[in-house]
Image 1 (tube, rainbow, N blue to C red):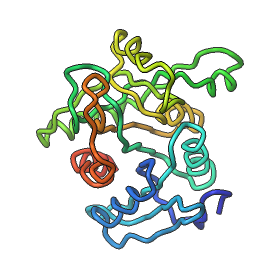
Image 2: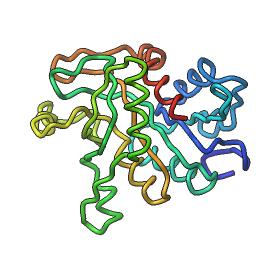
Image 3: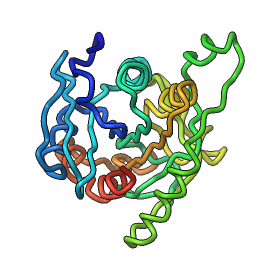
Length: 232
């Protein structure tokens, strides 16, 4: 048992899916996993372990933003022997040819957060996805006929910014989309020698202002989940 996860040794699989929303974690467990058991309810951040096609897999909510995300990722890797962490989340598309519900694989994650500069004494660290997981995800998506984009994404500390056009600079440098966790995930996984990949579904298009509802965000990301569960 760790500070923020109330699981016992052996309760959590070596592979954990990481949605930000704990209700999405419960939806994944109830919809996709067999014999799912809730191992965590501390602070309402739900975690479950079950089986998918006979293989054991866990799903753990992490909350929003790098600081919250890192609490759960650190405890999973440091205290429970987790080897693979796969983020399944939403993002806001920056590029004009990316549409709602499109699937993105984050090869690398830029950030406006200073959390890594604190860790690396003012230097910039460039975290990236695990190559094996990334290639497997591409293969799974292709075999299922699921279109995807892969590239650099932005993990931002700011959801409600003062400058409504600040994202356009990142767009002009080829960044695909913005979310709030992947840079932290890839950094922590590197520290512990774990495999990590972020699979994202587009919930907002920053250029057009289109957006999915909160209910759609929780329940309609089936293609992303199929890929993630096949990886697990």
